[in-house]
Amino acid sequence: MVCEKMNYTASMKKDLGIYIHIPFCARKCAYCDFLSAPATEEVKVQYVKALKKEIEAFREMGQAYETVTVFFGGGTPSLLTGEQLVEILKEVNRCCPIRSGAEITVECNPGTLTEEKLKAYKRAGVSRLSMGLQSAQNEELKKLGRIHTWEEFLISYEMAREKGFGNINVDLMSALPGQRRKTWVDTLEQVLKLSPEHISAYSLIIEERTPFYERYSPGGPLSEELPDEDTERQMYYDTKEILERAGYERYEISNYAKPGYLCRHNLAYWNRTDYKGFGIGAASLLDNIRYQNSRELTAYLRGEFSWESREALTRKERLEETMFLGLRKMEGVQLTEELTATYEPIFRDLEQKGLLFRQSGRVCLTDKGIDISNYALAEFLLDEQERIK
Image (tube, rainbow, N blue to C red; front, top):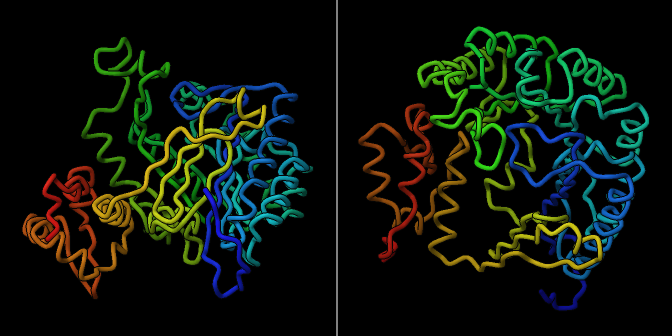
């Protein structure tokens, strides 16, 4: 990519989200198919050096942007030392200045946080922690292959509060092996006692090429341990009812927040704001071009930064993304003449089925539409004629 040399004033710069992939974990969870694995301290040091070089290579293009969100994901970013994370953020700020008040999130696993790391995060301007709990039931955590207990999570959570972090997300997962509706409700209630600002509640997906797939996929030796469809659906309804009653706004299909604490970085994805990914396997969207970084760690450590794929999105693909990403949000999608002209027959059909409604110039899924969102969102994938006049 080549960026024309010019001087950018603050008013000309575009907003940019930055994602930084840290592909290291203490131990691979049995359900996880993310690009992550255990690594030596030497490899982590080499990786941080390579990350800084990759960020530096973006510097010329980065001058056209102002960074409004930074998200360290993984893997387990909190496996890095506090100083390593500080170094990375300094490089980001040098190459693509971070706006004052930007949202900066670090994903953390219980058992990997220390007071030293939390102090370093604070010095570096980290404003938000995303803590992977998944369950408050130790037996469920053990089946997942998590490295922590509920009690160890509490220690990490309270430590973060003591160090002044006032914006914490807790990740939870339902439909786990052996999980009952009662234990899921108990997990929700235990987490609500901590009053986190944000809760992400996802249903387990059995991914191929994981130990869970071998155990729990249909026909697998332990598949009967998974909750049945009706129980899983009831857990889904319990989540919405319990969290909304506790004052959490459901602003996206799987995300709930107290007023003022919506995750700005995730909203940027759903709104298709430009974002740049650094690290192996990281994805980017810049000027309607999607990039996927190579997943090869050895080459990356040598300073070889390449794309696994590069795709300039067609008009058809941009429209599709606008709808099936934007409709994940409870506020839906702002209608334009182009969207209305393209999708009017689909809007009418889904309205008649009670899956969609229009209000104040926006189109949104109904509760019923959210319940079967995979079906509703798939309707916005255009056919060969593209339904575009």
